[in-house]
Amino acid sequence: MKTTLSGRWLTVGICLSLAALTWLVFSQTLWHDFINYDDPRYVYETTRITDGLSLSGIAWAFTHIHSLNWHPLTTISHMLDCQLYGLKAGWHHFTNVVLHTLAAILLFLALQQMTGAIWRSAFVAAVFAIHPLRVESVAWIAERKDVLSGVFFMLTLLAYAYYVRLPGVGRYLVVVSVFGCGLMSKPMLVTSPFVLLLLDYWPLDRVKGQLWKRLAEKIPLLALSAVSSVTTFLVQKGAVGRTEELPILERINNAIVSYVLYIWQMLWPVNLAVFYPHPENRLPLWEIVSCLLLLICITAAAILLRKQRSYLITGWFWYLGMLVPVIGLVQVGWQGHADRYTYLPQIGLYLALTWAVADLTALYQHRRVALSTAAILIIAALSSGAWVQTSYWRDSETLFRHALAVTTNNDVAENNLGIVFLGQGKLDEAISLLQSAADLRPDNSPAHENLAKALLQKGRVADALVHYRKLLELQPDDMEVHNIVGTVLTQQGHVAEGVEEWQKVLAIQPDNGNAMSNLAWVFATSPDESVRNGPKAVQLAEQAVRISGGRIPILFRTLGAAYAESGRFSEAIQAAQQGIELANSQGNSDLAAELHGNITLYQQEQPLRDPSLTNGSASP
Image (cartoon, rainbow, N blue to C red):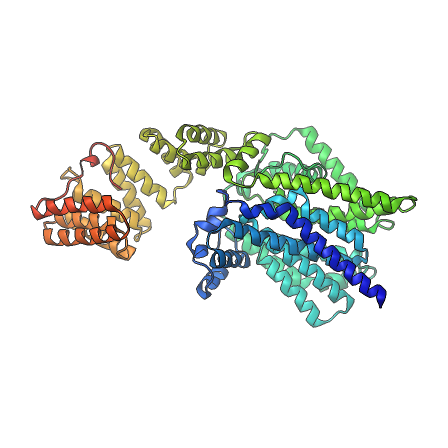
């Protein structure tokens, strides 16, 4: 009884130590900002998320795609954060750290239950908690899916350990349930049934003579994985950098090298970055062959030593198997590899190495002191490295400056740092970076879009139009790009071409308010009589106001101009007065003053003309 009690207190003490260690490294994120890479679309620029948690929001999360993913539980977690904390980034980081802490503790408990080796389990959990490769998953709010799915993965392991101890339908349903929740957090968990089968081999020793029974036991889990895989494939068909855009040989070569690169980064975690460009066809043959031979040798060694060192099979194939969905054979995005992809797969390597070192030193006289000292030094070194790496995530500028310092040909880092400079009004620096990003990858849509914005702000309208046209080639179905191109064309005096772009938008999206208001303004105020069309302007302007719910004051300026062009001056005055009331309520005194001037014109029964539609820049 006393031994059992002391063992429980030791377990509690290790859990508390894991929590303290995790917070020691990652608590600094509570003072970090959002990052301008994925955080906008995952959180603060998505109204469904910023509106907070609601029944309709939960239903939307389960029935819609969010950021080219179907991960409803992750989406709901972001909604909950916005409900509780608004858009205070530090609290969103707080949730990530809490989830990662839980994942580390649950990993320790699961390994302890399965192996009975408390200190080795604690060391594996500690390395998982604070390895520098974990930083991306924890310090990046958009990677909530990593830490949330990590919690459910560890719960799956723990539930499976209890099921194995005393099999039963109820306990098995718990395994299925938590695994399903994991898939709804991040579909990368599709290989988890394979991991459970490996655990059946070691340490649970359930495979001998019962392989087919163990495989049959995994069928419900495999069915969930199959559904998740198909769903993920379908929802990510529109992603940039997809499989069909990279030749199969380039993907295979990069996958081989990435497997070895992740091992090297585990052992020597320096020069880590938020984005690593895909090498495409630039990998030297000697590197590919060397990495392939190393992988074959390790695999052969694990198989040959399976009887004496069973944990090598589990640990090595855990690593190989869990990386399959993200190793790049099915490519989504232009990254060559990513730190976040190692979040769960590298646990297998930690297991294999930890048990191997313990076995190899079994006969050493001072084994306990040596291993304890080595463990403390390793954890201290990794904690220090993770602390430094986490500090780079404090804001977008620091993060992408660091990425450019440790990588080459990084168009994504140049693009995102360019966005930072654009927001700071440093147009020359922004244009330089964005131009470099566009040159590095001519089909980089965001670089062309952001470069065009920067050039517009710089007053280089013709240059901006070049990049907008390129953007249309890359994204012909992006209606907002057509809207912008229409505006830029009119700014250049090509009014007819601008009208054509907006008409393209309405042909595909009849309820596009931007295209409606832009066309209505040109039809109502163009100095060119052949362009003006009062009745059409009224129809479009009234529809734009209706779609907006009557809450946008500038639309009443357009509506008033349309009425005036049609000779309906009393209605023009009324529309302008409504616009003045709205503008004043929203603190837009400049627009209110402009509308007062329009009313004076309408009182004289004179329509409004916008000379900028033939020379200079068009009104929005």
